[in-house]
Length: 52
Image 1 (tube, rainbow, N blue to C red):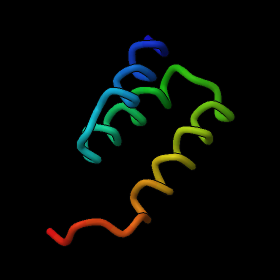
Image 2 (image 1 turned 60 degrees about the horizontal axis):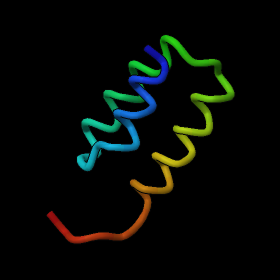
Image 3 (image 1 turned 90 degrees about the vertical axis):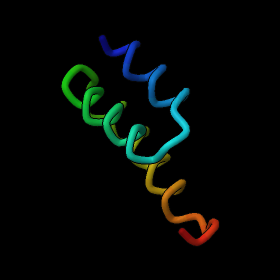
Image 4 (image 1 turned 90 degrees about the horizontal axis):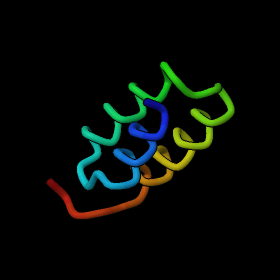
């Protein structure tokens, strides 16, 4: 299941779906692996983009 959630995170375009993949990954991956993914997620969300 860990591989499934890692692939889902990489493949997903929408941030809310990426967050769901991180949530699922947190159940199966080690804390270090989850930290790496969360660091990437936070850099993506902190980037300026188009206003909604």
